[in-house]
Every structure is written in C-alpha cells, then in structure tokens.
Image (cartoon, rainbow, N blue to C red; front, side, top):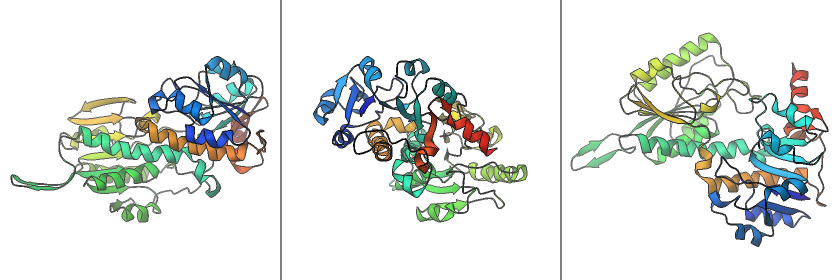
Length: 373
C-alpha cells in the first residue's frame, strides 16, 4: 500500500509522525511524505527518512498513492489529481459541509471522515475528536490565563491576600473536563454546567462544582454533542448562566450541536454584567459560537471583556497533537488495511460504515442521512 502524507498549509500539525510510520512500513506499506510536512511540528525530513518513509513532492504523492491522509480536507481541485478509487482519510465534517461527500463521490474516491468514526468502545483509540478536544480544553485555560489581568491561584503575600480566579466551564464533554482539570491545577475555583446529569460525577471528581437546570433533554445517541433543548429550558438555562457569569473571571464554552449552529449560552446582556477584565474562550466559534459576541478566529474586547473565538486550539500544541492524531489514524488503519497491505473495504464493519462518506461514485453520507429521515 502506497500511503501519501501532505503538508497542511493552514495547520501546524502533520497527519503521521515517524514513530507510527515505522510501524506501518513493517506491514507491507510504503509511506510518501511531502518535504517539509513536519516542519511546524518540529519533525524534520531526515526524521522521516530515518523512519523508512520516502520524502518527495506533492506531485509524486498525488500520482502514485493508493491512500492519502491529511488532517484537514484539501482544496477540491487537489483531489482531481488522484486516480479513480484512491482512498482518502481526513476530517471532512460532512454535517457542516453538506456538499463535500457529493463532490468527492463524483471524483470516484473512497473517502473516510475521521470525525464520523462512531463513539463506541471499539473505536475509542481512533477518536480524533476526543484527542483534539482534550488539547483544546487545556489550551483554552492557558489562553484565558494569558489574557486575564489577574492571578489564577489564591496567594497570600506580605502585601495582602489575593483571592483565586473563578472559572465557569459550559459543557462538560472532553474539552470541558480537560478545561476543568487545567483550571484547577492553576488554582482556580471552578464551576461547570452541562445539560447531562451523567456529567455530574465526572465534574465533581475533578474538584469542580456541578451546576445544572432541571428538565434537560439528554440524548445518549448524540455522540458526545449537545442536543437541542426546549425554549422553556433555554430561558432557565440563560438565567442560571447569567447569575454565574456575573461572578466569573473566566468563562470557557464548549457546547456544539452536530450539524447545527452552536447553542447560544452567553448573551450580550450577560457579557455586560461580567467583571471588567473577564475573559471568555469560545471553543464553539467555528459553528457560530456559544457567546453572542464571538467572532471566529478573532480575539476582541467588548464591554471590557476579552472574547477569544477559536475552535482549533489543538494546533497550538502541534507536537503532541500530531502524535495523538497519528496514533488515532494508525488504529483506524488496523481496520482499514489488511496484513498484506490491501484496503479492506468491508462497509458492513460498523467503524468503516459510519466513517465512509463516499465510495464507488456514491454519496454515502447523504444517502444515509436521507434513509434516517
């Protein structure tokens, strides 16, 4: 199997690291890496050569690879360079880009989207979303601490005592739980809100106080995403968040609805009531944001509150993010590639069936969505 790895022009990460490539090459596979692909993750071309990979240019990779792996989807015209039937792995986010699976099916490619890997026990080691969300939650707290004009921990000094920062985390999924743990390590006093009662034990195990509104809709089949709530619930939720936000120095928001705009949790009216110098880090910025004032990929200051809109903080830690993503891919390839180095296109396999969005000229994602309606 010829596997191609490309540079990520808008990302500091790389899809496969040398340690994983060594394991792949031992399984009748050859890996081609675009020169410079690992530079921003502090992996040199020589590191790849020593792992057994061939360092080359994108033209050779597109022309000879049977499988292309990337972190972010490539420009559509790039896929025109691939031979019919080439397999592609990336994060295509078809719930947010409804035409991508159709466009790729027209090009007669077999396409797997890592964000569609089911969140089941068998696939935990392939869960890219969780790997990257954990890093994002960690980075969110560090970003908040950098912009907050005060300490996080309580300090007793000769000049007096400084109280600890109060942190409110909205959403206790993977990113939220990592944010709680990081904020606690920095000495903050943390409260966390989630619509799922099941999150209570995890939140409290990390030393945070769990707050919630009664009457939430809890869909365990939502794959870790929040689900749409009733209007009555939303009103109660916003009242509680506003009450907590007034006292908070930092708010970190993580709630997203799959295939829909992120739920509005922090209104402009709430921001106006926050302490001067407070910080909001909105990890749902790419889908509209949980804060009404969020601007995606921007840091702004409104009503004396700093609002950081960034859904892709994982790439700020490119070394470990690349390692984790690479390991997720390796575990996925254990299912996708046989010991002989051939594609195993068993679309009855739950993992492959869920993650394959296009195959043999068919738009499998939209066909599946239509059949579910």
